[in-house]
Image 1 (cartoon, helix red, strand yellow):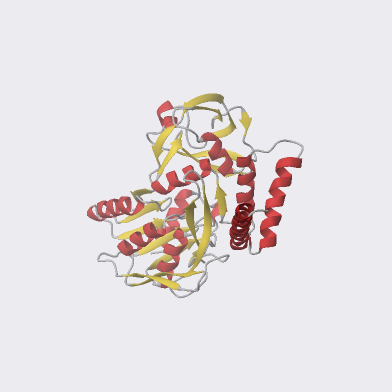
Image 2: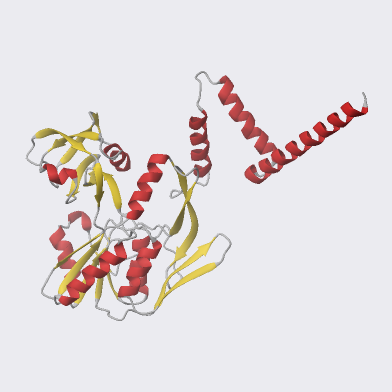
Length: 373
């Protein structure tokens, strides 16, 4: 072999070694060992070439990503498909695309909890709270997880969905509706007595602190002297949002302590609200995450009375990480503890006044709140 070919062969060998080195290093970084990396590559190859049906690369990748996140065995971490990622971004921003219904589920049946003003369901005038949704686009939704029912009703703006509604009076109606953008108000308020008001916070989104401040100031102007904060069924949301609301309500002190994987602690301190009123906070077993942060701070800072049942017990913080720009993953990145250092995860917030929600009407809930002052 002449020197020219020896030089080419030597260069090729060096290039191949460099490629193998980069691949091996990548496998090691991603999978913990080179062996695990080659095992993953071989598994992908076998699936692509040997499975009885042809698999698409995107299908395999979604399965891989779903399995990777599930391996954490964390109930609050998940891979988000493009559709799920979009819905999450909409929810964080307070906007949704659908027909404008808030739903609940009982004994496998899906019921209309609230018809959102301005949504197409409200504009149709054909559906009311208490109506039951039996089918979506001809498919039954009985015993289907509520999140999946919501996903079926949601969709691209301008598309149609057909709901089979069983009205409270027993009549059944097939109702076509056009999906459109709508905003779910996260803050609603009302007076319970001449000087006791109730502000319900459905979730904590980017707009919630501003909406809360507007309602709070309006109620104070109209004579509010005591306040009920209704966090029932509130699944949580933005840590920033709950922090801003706590600043409006609570005295000086610690709101929450957040511990990351490195063990570092991030403590959120409250400067002390300029205008405070006696508080009662309502919680139930579906009050979670950010709503538990607020309830536990009220309790620890002795700023009010907690009424209801023990909350959900979600004491972790999730980060949302985009992957391709269209999909992403939600991953638990930290744990939080109450201002006194109590863990909420798996335990929840224990109310000062226990009630029995399964036998209580809405008016009885409000009476319990008023009596707790």
